[in-house]
Image (tube, rainbow, N blue to C red; front, side, top):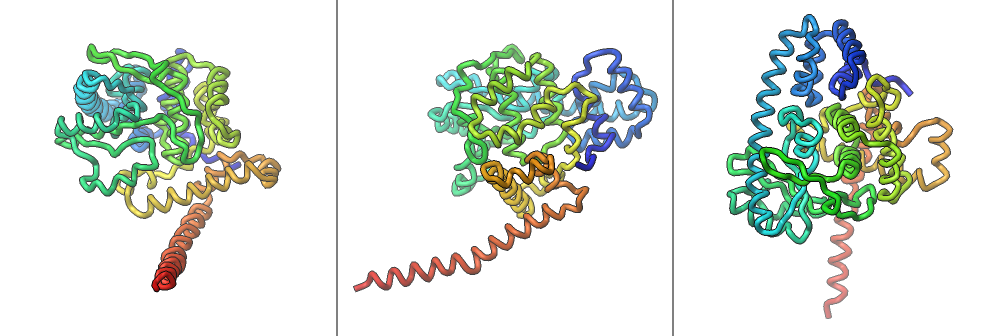
Length: 399
């Protein structure tokens, strides 16, 4: 496979991953001196790592990076203020919910901020995700409405968008500063089937601002984050997500053997495990070893763009990604998988090759064209035929 992961992103990944020794810090400092400071700062902003880069750069005192550190400090302070505001709003809702007998877990960014990074401002988060039991979802909605929170879509007909997902419609605070996404199960079965578990049973209590929050156990949290990256972001995640994995492993001293046993126990499809294996190896690798992250530069920044998030190109991209994953799963169940084996290409590498801008995005564009054509045929030919068939059926039933 082509080397797609450029040196600057490799350096940024290592710089923001947990630094474990003075020797490693010295190597990072040396590498930074041969890099363009502006380029590193720009990449950190794109990859949602600006606050963490500030935190990591500050003690290194790298010549030439003084202005960059000052600029990044502003990102760190703003992110800290925002995260504190978000967590305090969730803290209030938590108190009200628990008064009603509704426990909930913090997930993803909010959980990582207080358990792994231990500095509230280091982990940027677009919203806050929590988990409640399904039977408590309706009462939680009532509590959010009592706090003058409102659904993301005022039109309740939009509920169908979330019917197939593992969470209810996101709710926004009155000033729209907080977006709260309440999940009713940790995993869903849209593409990868995971055994049903109750994360509340082995949840871990973490104290923030004199309040005890529940978070999933470390191994369950790592599996959930991997799963979320694969399913919800379609492998178009940013370096922040990779850093999250490494920080989780380092902070909790997780062991690969125990984690793989958990994955084998919970994930029902062998081919799905194969999709996750490169990410698992990345999580447990020491910084500097990029053997299994060499394909990560095939990010689709435009698919993760907030501006394009709900526009048709985003939808088409998701559909073409779904086509790819379905094809990979099918190949895993047929003799055609020998083609991949002969080429020494894993499904994960195939998916990255498919999306890579280094190859002109031909396969990506082809996937979008196929989906556009299919939708066009469905709209112009198939649906009218069903309509006519219904009309004829109604006429035949008339006396």
